[in-house]
Length: 255
Image (cartoon, rainbow, N blue to C red; front, side, top):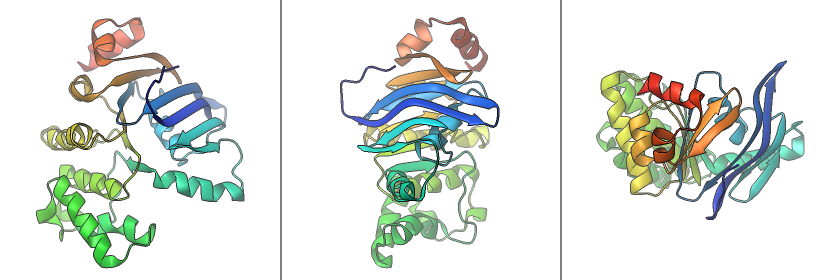
């Protein structure tokens, strides 16, 4: 659906996902170029989070193809030969969840170094150096030795972002990263996300209701409605020249 003239990092082709009789995604086509920030928005149940979970195969697509950095993986039946492909694909995607999903028995720095050490096999001292660098990037190097229970929700989510970044992914997938946070903590997480886009030029797909962030940081926005992309465009097009009443109604409700 989206025209692409740059270098596409993510390509989604004819993506369908059903849970039993319920078809959640009904044929999604999407491309995300290198350095692009795409905000995916829409009502609960419209398929936004399922899209992200299919891109890194946390959910098996019922049909369609996912491509990340040139690695193409077909949806459909999971076969043993596909396992390694999926593992490789996941290494290219950093995932940040609504609930921070930190390991409670590990300190902040141990959480962040776990991926490089376990998945990439980097030796401990190097993994720790990498982890400290990314904790510093999210403004939490002073909390490196704290356990998650001692951190605020905003701090935990920033550790989760550092953990995803430590794998040096080609694309960051952020699934409603602020929706579990108290209002006063949302800003600190959005500031880190903004810095990723502006300073690191990180390719990002963000499912969020934070329309201020979308207006300021997104290159493109995609409005999901009943399992399809109903409308897609720049923030200006979406906010000021909405083509569909469904999009307008949603924006009026959240703005």
